[in-house]
Length: 238
Ligand SMILES: [Zn+2]
Image (cartoon, rainbow, N blue to C red):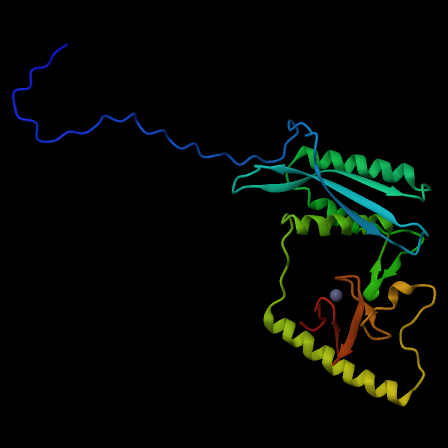
């Protein structure tokens, strides 16, 4: 169809296609329908306890959700536990199956950490490096889970305030001063060694420190007439 132009042409523009509406990617969260990809990203944590000559290896495989977007998030998908010591294999296998199932259900799985860490071995726990008490092997697996979830940003750190940190450092320094005097007075006194438990060797906490109920570390000392934990800062007086 011809159009007769009656007026002189003073301007023109090229007709454009309507602009495409940018699609905002929806953030995908973990849920049951997500099929296991052929490839997962794995992290292996070694657990060495005085309970066995053989170390235990906890492998947690992560699925990567929202890959390549700003919402990219690694989320645990399955857990495997391996050891040369297969004595405990039955319940360990059961535990890994249940934990993996909870991961795949999606939602907040961080409650597992607290549940596992509260398991006490009726035969007694053991001490880790730094005088930290581990109530059971299950609790230690819970701690591995905690480490992993922190690394993935699923658990956030409870930061001590600067003032609190400064107070702790001050108390530690005061205590070192006192122990140095004791060492001089009582030469040859081996303050904190136990041949059977070489894990305790690196302990920087004083002999005779009591177990802190908050962080399970033998780091509760009496300072200025008040029981204070040199590890987490918990104090009976505050
Ligand atoms: Zn503590």
